[in-house]
Length: 291
Image (cartoon, rainbow, N blue to C red):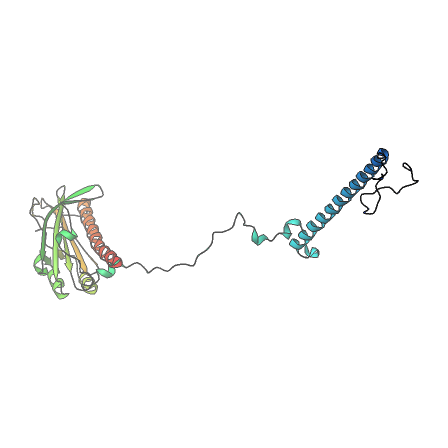
């Protein structure tokens, strides 16, 4: 196609640096508007083709990058299984994951209370009727016992009767503490014999028999009891202590095997005495652990 005078002219292409514009700047003629429109349309077509082609190339490049990333994450494609098998399971916490474990700490074993009441060397806490038998009464089960008179002597034989004085002396008893409790016409005297060692206390207890007893202790509102006739007696030992009970009626009536209330009174006070001796050991063990 020719535009204006001068014969055919090369068409202006903005993408070619040496192309000639469709008008002569020095000819004084007006521009060929049809040529300009056609050139503009050509430019737009080329631009659209470039953008479409560039977008396709970008899409291909992004897809290739994603494919490379997937292959890199999954490792060798020949070993890949299901999609989830390509994810390292160690990096994902499980719902059933256990709590972190810590190295166990070792604590010293607790001190044994009995060790502190097994010998006079360790059993150094204050000792007396009021430390072993505090207060003015005690309740065991449904029965409340009123505390009566107390006694404390280093002459163990003088506060015991039957075969017990000889046994206590032979095993070097150093002290005999007594206390009386009463309730509902029944009274019981508890005697605690103190030795230097656990072996001495155990030996003394083993030598007792039905004729071994501590003398009953009356007074302070408690009538005399078990001074004659039959009463129920017990003997035991724990640590360096041997402890005894002598229970009967304050009326002087003999105790028979049918008198279960007397047996229960003796058993209750026997158990209470054991607990008091054990608490003595616990207190000293606790103090030693804290110190």
